[in-house]
Length: 202
Image 1 (cartoon, rainbow, N blue to C red):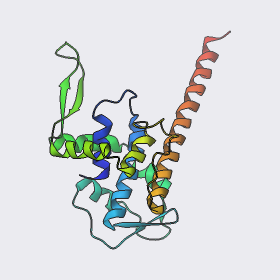
Image 2: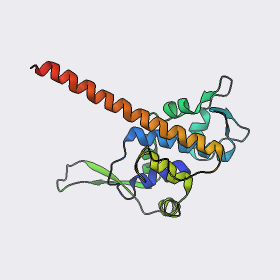
Image 3: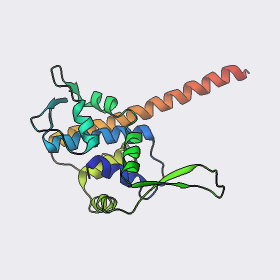
Image 4: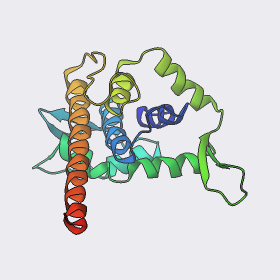
């Protein structure tokens, strides 16, 4: 299991009191992937730039796809730009991958046989490892979880210290991206409300 998959698992296990937005989770998953690639030596972070490293592509297919998208020539991509580009619809990609691997299943919600289907985690060793990692207080996983409101107060909660300066840079970028996404949501809500009021009239 990767940090990204562990994060996706704990986002569903159990269902949090506060639902995690797909956009927020996608940004955090992109950050988790970048941390996995850093650990594998596939990339390094120079200041705020994602620089290709010397190791081969990871075996995990989602991480391999992330590695394949790394900018190989200068000017290199900024960490923030990586999060927004790689994070597009990434939560859906992880859901599909875990369903294919048999780690997620769909169940019918409600009493009606034609009601909507919801996904739930299968009790697998990978799921148990992810939950154990969270319960043990892994600082990186906890910080990413805090960014999407799974732990702590929410995106503004910086979570526990993660030690390594490069890791801190990535985690901080995730927090900032999630807050920026929330600001965009609020602005759209205000604009939509104002537009509706114009049509409603005095």
